[in-house]
Length: 87
Ligand code: FES
Image (cartoon, rainbow, N blue to C red; front, side):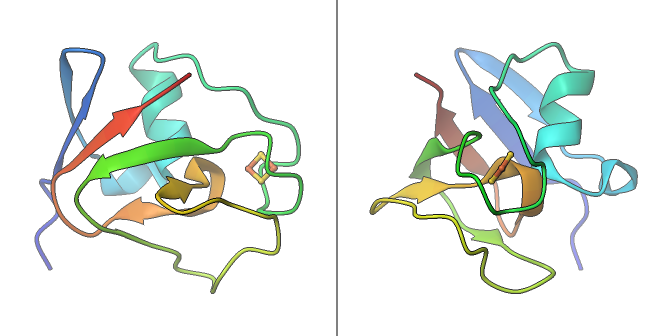
């Protein structure tokens, strides 16, 4: 598995570090602010738009509602290079 996916967000390029376990942890470590509440795929507070690329939910599909092209960073990891739009 390729572990060096790049996350592009707000003109910033971040290397995904698999040790961070989730995309949310990785974004926080790089000072990208994302709202969150449960950090477990239930509340939907963390949803962001996936503009490009693919993600994967290692623990299965989350329960919170997400719109088309929206993802929950608290429980996903990148499956390719990705580009995010954070409102
Ligand atoms: S923080 Fe609750 S779904 Fe992500």
